[in-house]
Length: 371
Length: 176
Figure 1 (tube, each protein chain N blue to C red):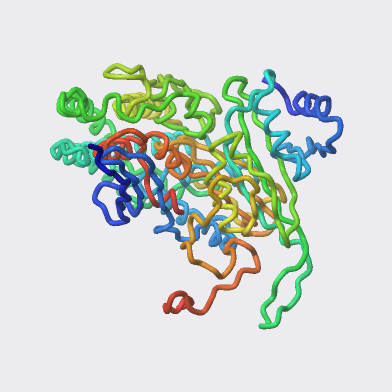
Figure 2 (spheres, helix red, strand yellow; figure 1 turned 60 degrees about the vertical axis):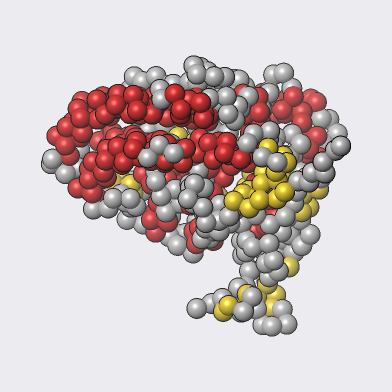
């Protein structure tokens, strides 16, 4: 006797605690096994690229913050590097070092959110608050520097908006001293937890060839085995003066390129960021951070593509200038937008509960996907 | 790692029937202008050639050049007729570490080009976004539909320079 079965379409709607924002996933299920996933985006589209065409170059910077709101320093960094190349300005060395310190602190903060919410999605509620406790200290550091916790408007074209607060270096050293044992604690609770490994190892395996063809960048690409990091391979700012490693997925708990690898690469990257911050603080030169900021910003006609290594991948800005005070076109290559395309490939053949594990390991922010 | 001149030589030698325009003098990024109907053959060659091996498409941007004639339509709004739109393809070879920028120019009134999704899967959503916001039609795209705007948005393509907002959308007033 045969049983008639049909495929069912299930909507993991825009309002869902585990989709990291307003993302709609249309799942086609055969029983509990996924046959197709179609992501629907656009619920947070705020017309960033249209706005850029009517604002002046410095006015665009607060808007770039709001795209990936969990890694705002990186967004500003990418845009400002592009405009400075168009103008041909060279910023003072102190500015470069401070920008690197801010970007690496932001990387730690963003990875803490990724790790904490990933654990919370899977069901581990305790590491979520441990991660946010450490993140609060980083946000306090940002607050004494520029007054804002999440959306800074700090990195300006040609320099910075404020110099470092007199207590900043001391507080950062204290934070690093107290964060290192917390990382060990996090590894004990979550990374080597048997239940967490069972839920994430061998789930959503991403082969390297597929990853390169789909344009995946960031920790997802490194977890599939390729040591590719823009800070070393297409170096910008003063990253070539620091000594740090690039962690790569090795398939320690399962296969190379599974969700556990993508999670573990983020944990290891936090350790490397601490090394960079310690070296940058030791080498920090003196100078004036506002001396190179031009009065009127009117780049010559031309176009440039500038990119930075954001915590989620490669963030690129394609800026076209027509010689006036506002850009002609700014196209943002958002890492989460490109990484989200892989959902269909990764989820086929898995169970519904694995979709949450895979989506958490892709680490998207809808502000950046929709712009 | 090949320089822009070496890549241009390879392309000229392999495609003697295609008319390329090389712009090595472009101040910040040298680029190659490729005719629109040949973009998929050129891109397939760029990806599969052993010396070039551009295995990664970094970015695909559409731009409204806004260089046609400005006329007034029947409602008194200013629209553009004629002119061009461009698409810029940034690609990179992870193995050899070289990068390349290719530009394609299309007619603004009926923009249409072959899709490169079969070559790099990365282009899938980028081309959907170019279709959604500019109205460029990609032939042979597996799933061409709107991506950022609502699926029933019938008032045109927002990132065009002469776009006008509608008065009402599903009963809600749009300008406020």
